[in-house]
Length: 260
Ligand code: SF4
Ligand code: F3S
Image (tube, rainbow, N blue to C red):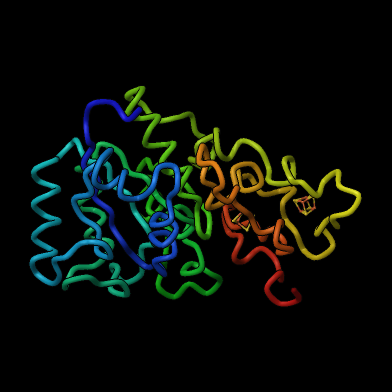
């Protein structure tokens, strides 16, 4: 289903908590090893690769040069932009400079997670570091945004698969999010919407009505086509209101964290 080529992937980590990588590690459709050793070629990923220090930096430069114009750059985390980006450094270079050097060499840039897409918690009110999503940090550079805190790896895999099969990325909404995953709200497909027994969490702060994402539809850790395997879960299913983590500025928008 992935076609005949293994697209090189360079995964950059900026101001983040590694939660998006943790989510990616739990990909179940297909599993992670099938992705990074089979379907794609993961050339650089600071959390997963063996080299460190200068060897790692050299790996990044080599991969970007060898696969220039061919690799898909997946970004995780916001980019501090204040004071020329000095609040985020890796190997003596600002994250801002790394993004400026690497992203334009890519075939396409995917921002994976709320921070890379829109700034996330690093960009919360105050934002002394000037943290921004990749699109804004690079002056409006076109990115495919897969927000969420964390995002669902199934959306990343489906986006990559669409590209491999069709040679183009799926249609996006006004926030750069793939419509196939962010075209409906969590509320629309929530099992509590019409349920008599399971209580709707709206009055507990649930933002499913205004949150465009596929959590209620595809859930997390959903292992399909495997008899006896768990069928996944999502926050509302375990009595946690949706806090809207795939929407821009969700981290500033309400006092949800204060009274729930
Ligand atoms: Fe909608 Fe949330 Fe209520 Fe589900 S729990 S029906 S997503 S408001
Ligand atoms: Fe986020 Fe709401 Fe889904 S909090 S993970 S968009 S259920």
